[in-house]
Amino acid sequence: MSDPLAEIVSILKPVPSIAKLVMAGGAWLVERRELGSPFYCAIVEGRCHLTISGRAPIILAAGDFVMVPEIHSFTMSSLQPPPRGTLPQRLETSPGVFRLGDPASAVDVTAMVGHCAFAATDRQMLLSLLPDVIHVQGQDRLTNLVRMIHRETVGKLAARDMVLTRLLEVLLIEALRSAGGATASPGLLRGLSDHRLAPVLRRIHQDPGGEITVEDLARNAAMSRSTFFDRFRREVGVAPMEYVTSWRMALAKEMLLRREASIAEIAARIGYASASAFNVAFTRHVGTTPGAFAGRS
Image: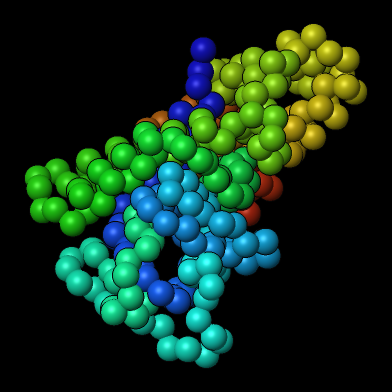
C-alpha cells in the first residue's frame, strides 16, 4: 500500500535554512514578521510564551515541541515580557548560539529553534492538508532530532546538506505522526486516523491513474455516497474529487519538472484518457499549459 504521509513529505522537499540554540534570561521578546516559512522549536528547559499571529498565546515548557508548517508572524517571549517599546537584547555568543535578555540575568530558558523551506511546486496545496500548528509534549525523539539538526548546521562535515535534508524529512514525519488523530485539524492526518477514510486515501495515492469516482471510493469505505462525501470533506477539509485532482496535479508538476515522461505519458499515469483532456484539466487547475509549465523550469 502507498503511504500518503511519506509521499507528501517527499514532494514538499524540506530545505535546510536556520538552526540555532537560544538561551534567555530575565525579560525578553523576539518578534518576527512576514516570514512565510516553516518554523520549529524544542524547549530544553524553562517556560516561555509563543504567540502566532491570529492565535491565542501558547505556553511552551521543557519537553515541548512546536512546529508551524507555514508561519508569517510570531513572537516568543518570557512569561513576563519586557515593556512595549523596549529595545530587544540579543547577542550571538558563538556560531549558532544566541543569548536573549539581560546578560546579567541567569539563564532560565533554553530552546533549539529552526527554520526551513519547502521547495515543492505545489506547496500551498500540500500545506493545506497539514495542521496549522503542531504542539507535542514529552516526545524526546523530536527534541533529539532538533538537537542533531542544530549540530549538523553549525558543523562543517562532508555531505552536510544531504544529512540535513534527511533529518528534516524525519523531523517532519515524526512531528506529523505525533500530531495525528481525531483531534487534529481537518486534513490528511485526520483523514488517515479515520478507519473508513484511511484505506480510501491510500487507494488514491497507490493508483492515482486508475478510474476514481466518488461512488467507487464510497464503496471502498463501505458507506453511502452522501455519507462518505460529507465525512471526507469534514475530516480531510476538501471534497473527495477535489483531493484526487489536486494530488494528480501535484504529481504531474513533479513529473513535468523532472522531464521524466512525455505529456501523453504523464496524462496516462495520472488518470486522463488523452493528452488533450489532461491539458484542459492542468490549465484549469494551474493557470498554464503543461508544456508552458515544463518550459519555464
